[in-house]
Length: 413
Image 1 (cartoon, helix red, strand yellow):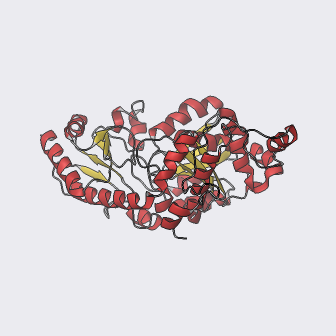
Image 2: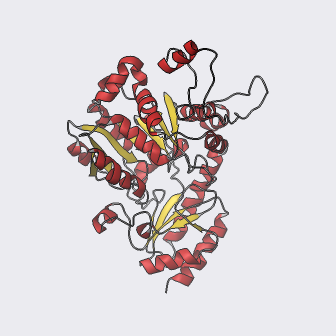
Image 3: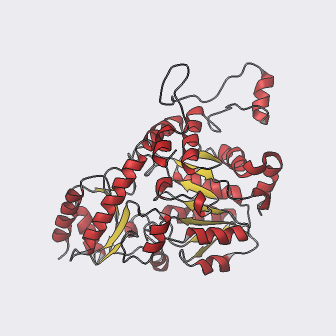
């Protein structure tokens, strides 16, 4: 099946008992068994079954199966949020004293996770230039347990050559963990580019409605876990073989930290997959049209969007993302004060920090998400005083142009 068809049909067929075509919500904490022996078999893994909804749940499992089908992965586990997905994936690969290599142009929440949580666990994060392959190679040590990056830097909008970084990681037997939230599996085939583990904030484009927090982790089956340098993964691998990472992530990290997705959230988020391709096509078309419009606007000082031919990473993005470039862009308008005025003058755009909603969203990153960054860190992340991040929605493009035009004309003196 093609992606569009899988997004609708894969992962669940109609219920044979009721004929329902949508997977039901199993809103239960735990699951009953007929005997103590059967219950024990489930806990020891001798028989499949659900134990407790902090570990697995049928509704969440159905959503996990759908994501696995869309990514052509080996298996998926869903989490309470995108941040929980990153946390669970990387804690599964590391122990105290280990190191992670991360791209500098990271979402602010991910940076704070590394600084305030991972550093406290004595896990060192070494930051490198996102698009410089040599900087990744130079940062690798015998303690490196993962390389982490985003498909498109948020909000820097830079694009790494992921296939080349994946090849380097494979040579050094290091899993490449990629956050594909801004591109989704529809635009970016992570497995085909050699990615080991794909993490997504399902809150964003996968759900699409701005209603439901969630995250996912998918083992794409490209990494040989027998080659892992992580002692914890090796231990689990003795019992679970090539499912070692997923077993470690679910049974040892997620179940013990309680970062599980709720059945209700899985149900709502799953509904978004039916329209994912339609929405992403419109997001991408609107974003490119708006970015092109901003390029010619006298009150916009700079536009950052990989879909523009003038963007330094355009050729890489065109090759990686099937000639579509996502729904996120940034503009610079000269000063923080001007940025505030533009944001405040918009009528259609909502002022909030989410992305991937049907509505257009705006935020001033420097004074919100990146409020605690030093000037050097902000510059490296592409966060400037006059920067506005725009998550382009599904409105008519003429209405979006008109709204930003009137805001720019009123705000820029």
